[in-house]
Amino acid sequence: MADDALTPVQARLLAIRQVLQAREHARQAARAAAAEAQRRAETERNLFANAVGPVRPLKSQRRAELRLQSALPIARQRELDEQAVMQEAISDEWDVESLLDTDETLSYRRPGISPEVVRKLRRGHWSLQGQIDLHGLRSDEARVALAQFLREAHKVGWRCVRVVHGKGLGSPGKTPVLKSKTQRWLVQKNEVLAFVQARPSDGGAGALIVLLTPG
Image (cartoon, rainbow, N blue to C red; front, side):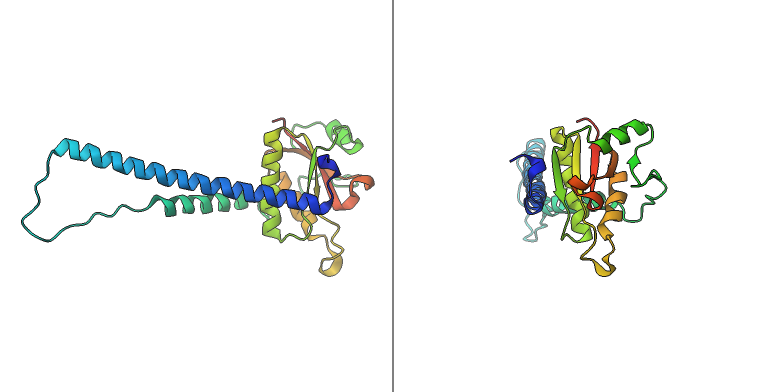
């Protein structure tokens, strides 16, 4: 089944699977870092032993113990730090209003991008290659899922994707909370060249069509 024909549930499952894969890659990197740290420690111990020669035990029974700090907590902290940086990199406080074009749908184009690009994007000049559905996700979950989706889409060379944020009909006051946040997040991502509100057949006011930089 083509990515642009995914149902909302399938799209959400795909996005969640991508996030889980990223976490598994981080865990594998942590284990590799721990193994590398252990190898380096062993090498340093061997170099020290070769440099000083045989060591005679002290007469005193008191011993000083040197404990090597495990590299795994350090790797885990690095993973947490990277996640924090990823979340901070797309802030909820970004002033997106000043960056949006004041047309009927408040489209966005990166500085230096021609208005013609936006017009082509709105007309469907680029075919949709994938999508992510943020329905039902909490704000932090949606932010991480969107960032991961954009990275993976850019990595595989997708140029045009759909981001479904919903119309807010199920939110308190029927306010589309994720819509404005999604716009803020997208304008902060280097992978994004432009975006427009989707055509009615592609989700209308509940989705954005996003043009990505070439991979």
